Image 1 (tube, rainbow, N blue to C red):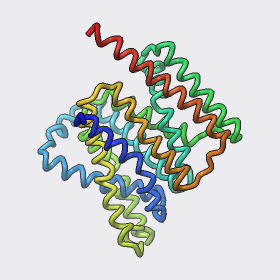
Image 2 (image 1 turned 135 degrees about the vertical axis):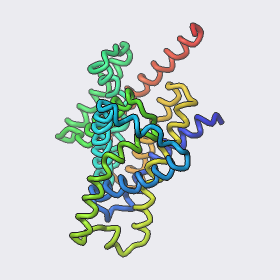
Image 3 (image 1 turned 90 degrees about the horizontal axis):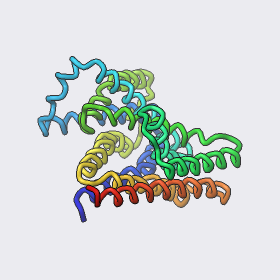
Length: 294
């Protein structure tokens, strides 16, 4: 197997299993889980950067306030995405969370059109229209918009847009984002400790404490594998692999967590899957058409 394919597949498989991890920590409130994830992620990332002697990017940031401002925005978008996802898993909305990551690629096309002046091709517009019909159907048959899915797609799509133009690599960028969020996370955990509500200290389960500590490598390692895969794979292959994660989350929501997946709800998902199939097929066709010219 191509090493890039292996790295990327392992990253998406890891993200697809995240509901199992967060469900195992259901006793930890989502905001506290988010704070611990920031704290332990920064400690792990600092260790990785130290081993790799990869700290040279820090000093130049002091002379680049616009870059710092961009990462402040991306850090809060990332934390918002994490919080919504943790809350969704721990409140029985794994299927809704998977829907958010299914529609993210199509939302990215819209963001590119609106903000980067990119011009979607006709099949891409058709895919966006199909996905919009699927979302509208889900909203109509449930009586409300799928806010969890839309919020996850919006925060992750906007985060990806900011990182698309960022001047730091994945490891450095995530390290800087967690460094920005670290003071808020530390202050919140200290406040919880003062109130006697820090689950890390009060839980009767050592497993819970170890799982909280593990949030550092669990957050960073898939990202590093994704970065290694992205450097070795064409975007078309990477784009197809990204559907591993929401597919696994959907299956876990239906089969393991026994969430409701009625035929009416499936109809909306089928429309979105058809949109994604069209989007992926059109991308592959364009790549193959461009290959002889290259």
